Length: 388
Length: 199
Image 1 (tube, each protein chain N blue to C red):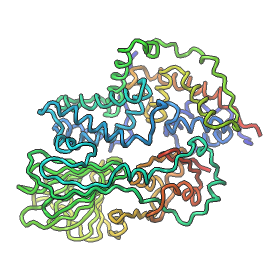
Image 2 (cartoon, chains in turn cyan, orange; image 1 turned 90 degrees about the vertical axis):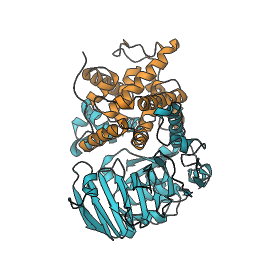
Image 3 (cartoon, rainbow over the protein chains, first blue to last red; image 1 turned 180 degrees about the horizontal axis):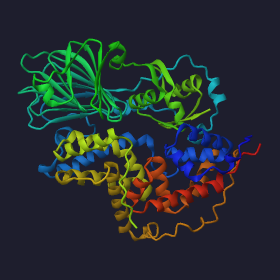
Image 4 (spheres, each protein chain N blue to C red; image 1 turned 135 degrees about the horizontal axis):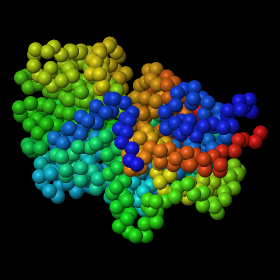
């Protein structure tokens, strides 16, 4: 019981700001104490915040990636009816059918694991979602779990080979959540795309220049071609290399664009002009360097790191070192096409160290509940995290 | 009275990025367009599905909004935030679609007197031992009986985490009206579910 009379008449304005994430820590604590005294309200608000009360009840978040893919193709279809206005490369990529990385015209050959089958291995077992919501911490703790390991099974691998880059339009490759793709660029270079990433290849690639644009996460292995440098544009970062391998991470919801060099040398700058002229010195990064460019301030910094850890994803592992839980969850949701809803934002900053590989996603709720003061409930592909 | 306050955005970085993306789209960059699609598809579909009568209709609306932006990309100059633009566009299109079918007229009656008491007859026994799915059905039914504009304000505010000004901008109502919707929503939720635990 509380001895604080304020608990009984918590202000609507404060509750509203709490639900919108606009509160300071002290206010947040205050609201949470009140919610602890009001279980019913706590549960109802958690359901609302998790998007389960205000959407159409027919909207199934499990279907979201599929609908998004279908609808992207549909938008491309709507815009290709007029040639002049068509989305660049849309015909090439969508004409062959379902997948965004499906077989297309003009010598692009694609082998892909059946997406639907891979999807199946990922799908958590379907129990009554609402029952799971109430699973209490005791029940979770009973399931003894060693370590914090999330599943890797089911990551899609798309292999693109035999690229014939004769078309006049730019090419775009897109991976959805839970997908990986390897794009062979036809010049001996290849790009391994992480989930939720977009790679655009210039229309004159390998003729007058080798220029690509990346959003998301990509590992580049670039073949040397004297006199024909390879350039990458990612967010506000511009890279120029000759022959080297490195990764670029430029997710739009992250503050920094980061470059990790595995071997060779990479020039990094914050403008196209700086990278193409020799007047302005660009920062040159080499093996085991990480370069960060802030999206807002364009500040560039360089540090020494163990590149192997940061590149572990190319081998099917995710390695975290003192990473805030928020970042860990964001990464897992990208790789496994699941969604985390953190009801209590204070757990976001808890540091996590661990490696995620080859274990079922089904065990994630228990693992998290075991090492953290949280309660995790699962409903389809949505995990809701509340503090214990 | 229409409120003219500029909408707030989560961070300056987002602002810069969005402006950059819009520039790229205007120049015909399909990758930038796809980034916008990937960023906004989920939230917009959730929002559209709360306004339309079916998920399929909501998907059509979202696709149409994106396709028409691509068509008119050369002159695309979203006022305020890109997010606000997308939500307004989806809202207008949903309402038009819904209005086209007269049976929905009542649902979208703009002069809905929102300060009327909630419809009675939604008596729910909230018993923690009841079958849970049944219980959530009942909570859902209770919320569904709230006025549509109130539910819309709740959704934009608490799920999309928009500021009051941004919600007002999207819904085309004043900031005061948004605050009233939110406060009435909280009042009815609290009167129904806000009883302190009995120890």
